[in-house]
Length: 170
View 1 (tube, rainbow, N blue to C red):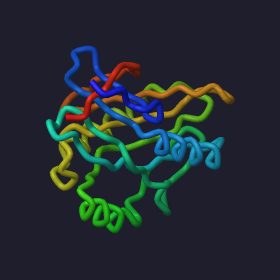
View 2: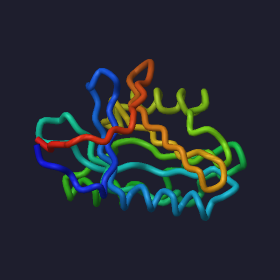
View 3: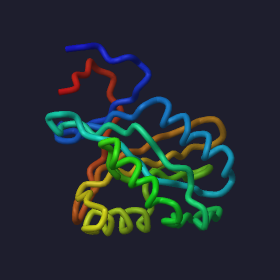
């Protein structure tokens, strides 16, 4: 196995069915959007590709919060304004919609019931062509950050845990 540079973060579920690789630059960009949105919630989309054997979702790009999104202290509704061109450009580069990112300022990174229901609806949305979307939530208080990543299926979600192991990209 090839040792991956520590520039990336890796997550997997307990059954080792789902793996997610989050590029450090994407994580830092999301943190930047969180910082400038504080104390309001914000979010955007996750874009990337899959390893050759389809075992790993590689998050390699994120959107900024789309214009016309609704940002409140304890609520965020992402608009689709400007996303079509982002999706078109991603598709040309062999990249796809992988899911959503979201910020819970001064709160837990665990998803709310609204977050869960929205992601389950996204998993059923044939237009997105993503039956198992990823949800990444940043939470925490002050400078203490917490990250929550899960994969949604038609009726539930699977929590992924941060792992620090050798990684191979097949």
